Length: 129
Image (cartoon, rainbow, N blue to C red; front, side, top):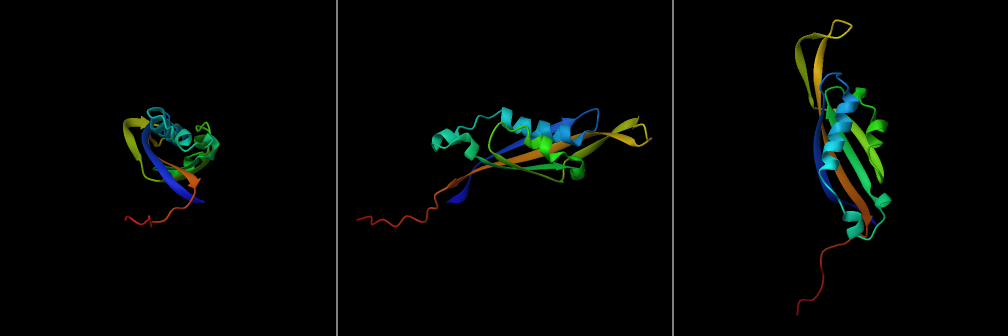
């Protein structure tokens, strides 16, 4: 068996007021998932729990993302979430938090890769005659 990539979904999410990186990451994942309906498990006659789901979420402060909370968005499959550097922090003019630091709107991007363990296949070797 070999891990074979079947689909990729992309999404964007934001935290407009709270500057919450986890909320923005979850919304990016939801954006990618909720506008699509993958039926690949059914197409391969596999259980949905056989899905291998690899997620990368890009935000300006990856260490601030609760990856377990992002993984909990998925209803099934073996889910792995990695937060990476990216996204945008958009400053709010004249807005400060309780520590006097500038406030930001947080924007996150998510890439979701869906794979399955499928039989390995090589190049076709049949006789065309």
